[in-house]
Amino acid sequence: MSRLIVSVSGVRGIVGETLTSEVAREFGRAFATMLGEGKTVIIGRDTRSSGEMIRDAVMAGLNAGGVNAVDLGIVSTPGVALMVGRLKADGGIVITASHNPLPYNGIKFLTPQGLALSVDKDKAAQLNSAWENKKFSTAARKGNVTINHDTHRIHIQAVCDILDVEAIRARHYKVVLDSINGAGVEAGKMLLDRLGCELVHINNKLDGDFTHEPEPIAKNLTGLCDAVRQHGADIGFAQDPDADRLVVVDENGTFIGEEYTLALTAQFILGQRRGNLATNLCTSRMIDDVAEQAGVKVFRSPTGEANVASAMVEHKCIFGGEGNGGAMDPRVVIVRDSFVGMGLLLNHLARSGKTVSQLVAGIPRYELLKDKFPCPLGAAQRAIAAVAAAYKGRAGASFDDRDGLRIDLPQGWLQIRASNTEPIMRISAEAKTLKEAQAMAQEVRKIADANLG
Image (cartoon, rainbow, N blue to C red; front, side, top):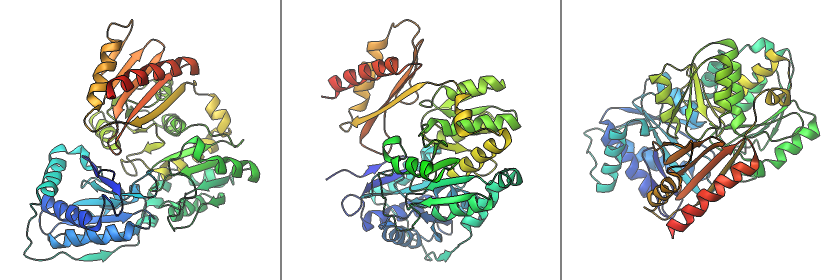
């Protein structure tokens, strides 16, 4: 049986094995204990069939601890984050396992600002301690549950408020959207209709039946590429199950890579406004090139949108995100948001008069390889230390250990880190040529394997 993954952001596990209704109820009790009686929590979920069971259990735990719950129903993760702020709630919960396969589900906890709880390590530790020790507060009065169906309307209006809607509508773009039968179905259609697009919507049912592996990477999106070519579309978009990540396919049906979502949206933003950017340590150098062209800085943080959000606030950045397809615009909500990504990319096309492939050609290209492999519990640091020792003294090497280990070299950069949500390690390597990136990734993997036993 796989283990329950408990991190500073929340919990993920296989439903019915490690993530049961009892575990979900206990985490609801723990969150209520952390917040205190009389507080209010916003809850939303993706379309996984297990979502209702986990939601009900979490709400039962919250109510038992005297906390009120506002049920948004099936909504995106950025939608929940937005509504936490709009409703002035004391916290939020998203029932989702993001891009993990269908047997998984998870519980993600949000701060009053709509950020992952990992932004407040003390609160995260308090939550996990309450759960581990089963020390839950007893409420004098039970909490209640109310229903709110306003998320999509409020969210899409917030996105449109930062766009030149009429400029986009005048282009009558044909768009193929793959919502993977996830939480982005309704709001995705709402946004693209509002922007005057001719929508070809594939995998657009709210049934949680993921028709392909949910992570929006090239091998899982051949159907989207085919649909763009078949329909002669101007652009193709793919969301993940909780609709915080966005990946783009160009007008030729070519998957252009998840890193381009952030690079292209940042390029558009910097064409309209001047200000610094923030991203994480494993995002492509394309964002640095885009920033350099505009004469602004990029501030890097450890992986995780809450870390990027913290960097954005600290350095007063106007835009940011992660290279996994996550665009973050604080004018809407300071978390990854696929709807912000779609709107900004369509606005970029409309303002520039260019095609997606032409915009892509205007950004320096790199080869970025990403690999993942199983990692025994507690072994990650041993592998990271071995990589650091192997590269010590290399000409031109600089080290950053805020998130695993990133090493910048004259020919590119590499990173090795443990995942926060899965029992795996991740390797990233980027260089100007595929051969150089492969060589770096293979060397790091060999060192890691030798030290993981």
